[in-house]
Image 1 (cartoon, rainbow, N blue to C red):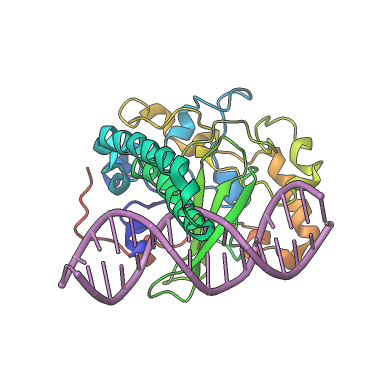
Image 2: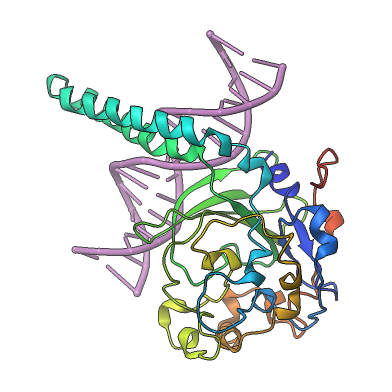
Length: 303
DNA sequence: CGGCTTTGACCCGCGC
DNA sequence: GCGCGGGTCAAAGCCG
């Protein structure tokens, strides 16, 4: 179920070489608009988009290629108005009830408060944030991306021996979430789905300043925090961008930031905690996962 | 002690 | 209406 939710959105970013795969949810119809380059020696890091210039982490055309809203999720977009209405009405109800909880028992108050709190928090969810997913062939479940994530849940996935983990950005005002789960068809593949847009700079800035690898290598908290995923540098919700970003949708712009060599060094010094595939000379691309391993929804037509 | 993970319970949407 | 599964909450525990 969840896998299908992913799989109809995710397409592989062909890096060639048959190494580890990085998959993004690029609609099939757009695939031919992209050009890819063989990064046979690349790791996941290397596949990440490089900013055109070393500053603004937003407005990077190259990054836009990644941050496709999951169409199945965007279906909810039209509910914006109603959800905001219901949300506000709920808040009113909540406020009202909270004010009148004085007459209830503590337990009741607690339960009601919990319900209201949840309802309050869940309504906005109806307005789904754009999502995109990566598939990476790695033994590491949680791919660090420079941001700080707090795990808030883990669920068993139906028909999968592997649980799905839920993470939320620890930044106070940032509601970005991500889910991490392993593919049932290839346990070596980790599917990471990002939802939402960071509204703050990357705390680690692992690749934010491409010319300053010190940013990662020098930070303890950044140990293993070098997976920089493109969406992470958005401040604006992704817009339909493929049509006029064609020239930018090339992975020729993706190179191995020097930052990541630090990651590698770091990881090589701690091989026990690192995927062996990441340490291979040929990197992830050599482990490129055939897209055939993805469960494809035959009914999903390219838009 | 603060931040994080774990984990059971709960809520909600959806399909039947 | 009911059951299932996904998503979230929050208390408890762990760790540096």
